[in-house]
Image (tube, rainbow, N blue to C red; front, side):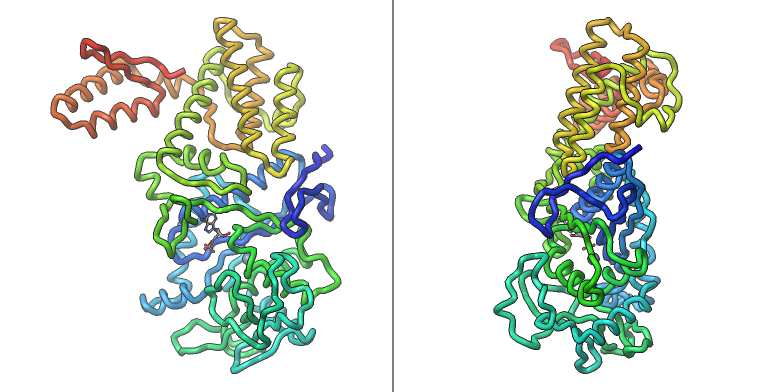
Length: 485
Ligand code: AMP
Ligand code: ZN
């Protein structure tokens, strides 16, 4: 199948444009990944989910992918924390790296082809520094090597930052960069104390600056630039501008990145969620509040990646209700047909013979190909849910085989992007719960209420809701139950 045409808003040009990868069938993508010194917060996770949506959309569009995300396992924070705990950098970062992968798994984020670590790419970084030195763009001071941004004519081209006020020779040598502060940035840092992790290399004893790793890894993995480079919008300056300077400075005759995509922030009360502000939730925090991973995923992907998303538990609850509604439609549909086992992969790319479903299918593909317009894709999904419910209502649940099969295939296709629906047989999901068990829960809830233990009563109601059972309290003080529609 020939891939479908995509359009992306490219930060480099400031425009939405046709996406033209170097190889028309296969796409190379590099994404800035986590710094592994703590649990990721759900703002970080929003940026990883964005990478997943990009991946799943391009796969649905018929592309092959070769994708990577770096693991920053060396920086000031990591070194300081490992010295404080008196353990090696590797010992310190190992559990946090594992926690990162666990979060990806919990949220159904697909594994990429490569996860390069900074500490495993030191040689590549040293070679890059040497090339920059020989191109006259890097200089050494007291064992540190800096990139001279005045010598690189194109500095500021990506982020459109104004460098005219920059004083010559003012240097930045920490990993924590101020936004808008334009200075020569450090490529290689001299070892300052003997506890500090360092490597003995051709350019001296020391360690790489933060920006260097991404340029070096892209070179190491792809041998040249990439079609797409992604990261959170906070990385545009200085991190991506510096990556651009390093890579283009070293290989001026090559294209470094075709399309730059930047994901907007997750906010809390209008402010960026961040570790330093302390206004963050980790995935664990939210799971402990009783939300399922699929609800968190559904919520965090629901906004367009270029829109800010203001996080609140109330909004998360709304996503849960919306997701339940869709899931119940799928169960209802499943109940009308024969047993549904596994939908064959190839059926996901089939054309639908039912006109209404084929129209929704092309609306869905057009939405994701249009700069990953998930809100529009969601609108198509909700329209489809309405169509299925209406058809089931009108036919008193006796629908044609064709409608049954094509609807399920389309739900599966939607799920190859959203990854939040379940297609297990209804018997195991709803009918697996006996009426006896439901009545026992209702009785426990009544006792809890009599004891004024409203938290327990509420939890019982929520647990039943999660299983698709809705309770209603009558005026007479009884409780009835029904399957959620
Ligand atoms: P870090 O682990 O701090 O290096 O960040 C990993 C990724 O998370 C980067 O792409 C950041 O741009 C992104 N990021 C950090 N904070 C947020 C936020 N509040 N919302 C969305 N993305 C974020
Ligand atoms: Zn990077």
